[in-house]
Length: 217
Length: 222
Image (cartoon, rainbow over all chains, first blue to last red; front, side):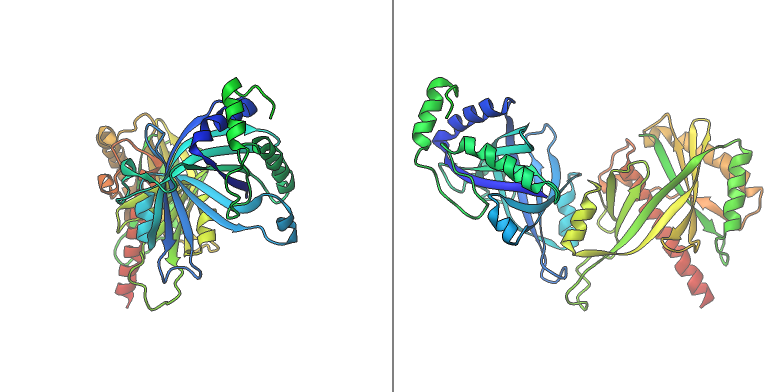
């Protein structure tokens, strides 16, 4: 399982967000360049339709591949009351010919995209990952070099942390309290519930850029 | 990793495998001063598509195999011989397959037995049995030569070892012999440097032989 919240930020404030994250996390950022291929089961395959993502990490000297399955979100009144989405998520690192495997099994390409940005991984009450990336689409099949932004000027921020059925409340609390530090720059909420950019972003960014993140927001 | 050949017992026409053959072959290893090192196990699973309309089967692979190996406990292998495809994955792929519900495991075969050390060689002799059953379906032998990882560089040495081995086994006048069929690894995108993916491909090949043997025995009976 994983706990996840998302938000958006204008590209012009991303540098300020990076400074803030750097200060909060105390670790260096990692560059992010991931080719994501989303596949869906063919019409007759499986008792229910299924979806799987193949992620190719293009930042590595030799690109590495991961199969990722995102399952259903936790439901019920308990899930509604918490501020983050908790869902099943399983990943498996695989050899580079995995796309051929899924095509042979009867999966079809649904869409593909390229995420370009950076990530921070650190421990703060939970093992938290923050990714800030622009989402790009390919004009030609698999042409990652010719990708163009889906939403120019806007980047996606995602905060995730691994969780289990035993500890998800603590993990959600850790993620939520971390998100509060980012609140002047962006608002993070459950995926699918877009809250837009925050009005304080420009002022907060200007403040961060002027003193390198030294000010407590 | 060290080069390995996977061999299977090819019974003479009209005969079948039995546990007595396995006992005799094991004695051969012990007579060659093979030192018992414990047990080993590998499992091969046949998958079939989970279809909404069972009448449309043709577009889906019928040779989709999954394999777990003791030498790589955190990995899992998928093999499709028809597509010349072998894929290595972390074992969590099994959870993903369960969640996708697009393919179901149909039947699984265990390869299990005793591991021996014989100088620089490691021999694993084992029976092939369906899980939840004791019906012997075949005998396999892994021959691993620890100092070399190159298939080509080790070929002559492996052949010489097998000559000695076949001679030792032939003295017992058993109704069959061990057979080595080397798959064309480059068809699967594999290099000369030996990996566990080579092992998975070899097992898929051995399985093809075992099925062919059973089918021809049935044809003779009928």
